[in-house]
Image 1: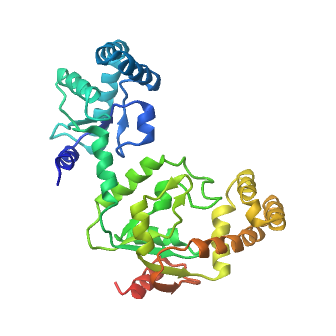
Image 2: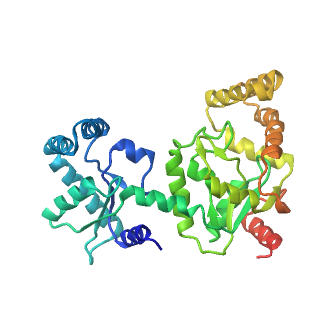
Image 3: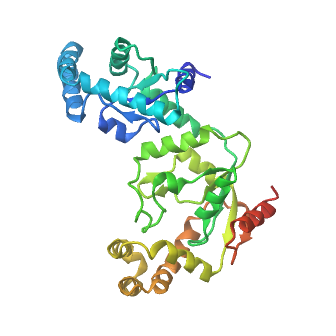
Length: 349
C-alpha cells in the first residue's frame, strides 16, 4: 500500500463530519461522497486568487485570500460547529468527541487554515494529506483491480433493475449503475429522476461501492452501454463488464409492456413527447407520429409498443457480457421470493 493510500485509510478511520473546504464549483465537479461543502472561497473569489497567484506570485494571492476571509470567519466557524452538532445528533455521539475531517484540493493552505482555526476553538480535527487529489487517485486505481462481475441483461421491461434491488436487499454485492447515475439509460431515462452527478462524481460513487465489497465474490451489475445519460462508465470497469459472465432475463411481451406502462404512465406528457422527438430520426416519421398521438391520448399500450421494437434493436446491437450466457425465463413471476429462488436455483448459489 503506497503512502498516499495509507493516508486516505487513516483519514477514513476517524469518526466525525466530513468537510470539503474547496469552492462550490470544485465540489460539484467531484467530492468525497457524504461530505459537506463549507467553502473558504466562492467560485469568483477562487478565480481572483488564482489569477493573482499566476500573475503576481504567492504572497499577493495569500493577502487577497486573507482579505476575503476577514469578513466571513465567524460564518465559516458557525457552519463547522453546526455540521459537528448535526453529526453528533445523527450518530448519538456522547462518549467520544468526533473529529472534524477536512480536505481541500491538495491538502494545502485551505485545509490547514481551517485546521488551525478549529484548534483555536479546541475542536478535534484532521486534514487529508494530498487532499482530493489523493482521493481521486484511489478512485481511479479501484477500476484497475480485477472484479468478479456478473452482468444481468434483458430487453427493456424485463425488470432488471427490480431484480438488482432484490439481490441487494438479500445481501448480494450489487452496483446499481443507473441508480448512481440518476438515469435509466435511454432517451426516457432522465425523466422524473434527480439531476445526474458529474461524470467524475459518478466514478467516485462506483469506487465507494467497490470499497465495501469482498474480493472473489460475485458483483452483480446491469448490462449497460458505455454511457448512462451524460455519465460514462469508467473504461477499465466497462472493459471488465464486456468480458464478464452474463445472465439474460426473459419475459413475455405482455409482461414487458405492463412493466413499461407502470414506469412511464405516471410521467409528464411534455417530457415524454420531448423524449420521443429526440429519437424521431431513428423511430421514423410514422412510429414517431403514433407515439406522440398515443401519449396525448394516454394510450399507454400503443406508446410502449411503438418504441419497444426500436429499443429491442438497440439492445441487440449494444449487448455486452456475452460470455457463458445463461437465460432465466421469469415470465409471470411477480412474487419477490419466488423470483429470488428461481434466480438462485438457476445460478446454483
